[in-house]
Image (cartoon, rainbow, N blue to C red; front, side):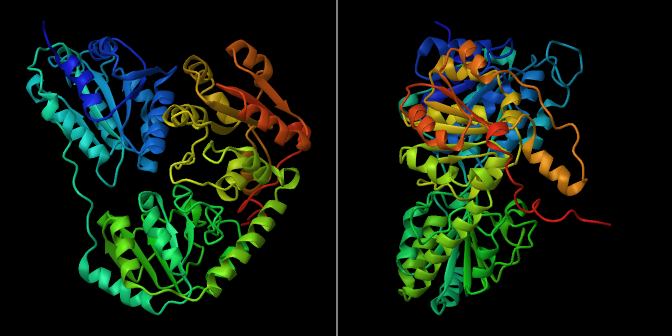
Length: 546
């Protein structure tokens, strides 16, 4: 019986712990997916588009903390996956993108064979952490190992691998899988001199804050130790839930962007330790928000040093190891600071909710009806850019997924990937009608896979976010009205329950019913009936002139 590179790919994935993969079968990946189908060791989720499949693999990786996998065909298929790879790169998600390539005798010769796109490797390299191409059958295991290791090595990210169609069919020796494992590098200990300097800086700080980012997702226990010593915490939007946000000692995603009360509170803090975060311009109003000083930055990536905000000290090292070392060396602080932080959090949350107009009660109501372990997935829609990112409590480090790159449209496939990675937990994906339209066919993927997913469409009949940006930037609205389908009729067509909310008082009971319904559910929030959502910061200010 022959054993080919396609067979090797199919056996490599479960050997490195992969249980679910996403994508579309096509001419240039048939040998690999045929081999996968014959083994029944990996669940293969048939996306309706490569973009959706890549987003699903991304969300699956974020929720599980394991390798997400997406298969595409070469050429147009690989190009269609680019938006998903871009988002995975923003989010630091370990995604392995396996794509075909034209036969080796045709590669890079621009001969016009099917799906042959000159420059495909460069295209994938531009949007991935690394891009590999298999050049001989003998190196298949080595290149697969290098690709998966690169994706899973901090700082994690998406990696693409091209496997030419003729090599997929080439015979190779079957590896000894019992003796195989990925040799991932160990966690990097903090640099000793920088660690000592950080301890010295923090020893006398009476009002210190942690800013926890994506790179600190594995450091929750260590961060908790520092909170127990009297630190306060806040997070980036991709670091939410590292400390459960119902803990009064963390501001969670209410990190100052859009909250004057939080920005004022920072002035009374005497240190900030930034852990595994870029301090992105998107979350700091293009780096204008003042942060407590001195600022100590901890990151495993040396290139993070000084990338955005200047720091007084940079410590290169693994987040958990470094925070544990700080906790080992520091003494408890007075409880007064954390009491002030808790009071500030309550005031700032109430003030933010008061600016949501008719949607003021939505964050608290939704959190009340959500199971504690539910997954909170969002698209870039006005509801997420206001309350979704900031004041709906996230309770686990891998319980929240959103487009870090701020794209409109990934919400539905991100929700599917999260739900399928959630081990039976319910997920809710909040999307706008504009974003929903981008990947609407993936609704049928959710139904086919019976994903435990509520698709909550905030329907304001257009691009609500863009309307407010246009008001702010241009003083007029244009190209923003969208005609979409009747969502309840669409739910019937797709074969899933549909529910509509047209009044604020119906929001909680309807969502409670949706959470109690097995499988996928489509819930439409009729924002035209409920009322227009107010603009959010900074678009709630006067339009700039000049």
